[in-house]
Image 1 (spheres, rainbow, N blue to C red):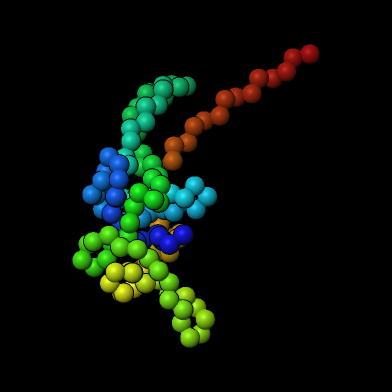
Image 2: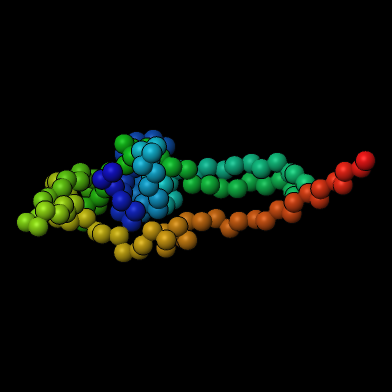
Length: 131
């Protein structure tokens, strides 16, 4: 995929059209990305086992075809590759010819920032079998 974690992108279609944000997660199998502040939905959780019901806001992934990487001017751009003399590839923006901002954080740091707080639920006690 040509869009990586940490890239600055702009949404081209949908309810969040025109908004921009940083890519937090890339899902290659579904060809989608999670973008900071984009596609936020409210999930209603039912009350269960003494826990009260709640409304939780979640960031849903959006299709990679609905976003475009932005250049230094803030305009949408396309990504191409340039072969170096040693045989490695470098990402290059098509319109401006400049290199996109490489992500400064590692994958583990991005996951830590994106992880929601996990709630622990006590397991039910098992019933003793009677003979």
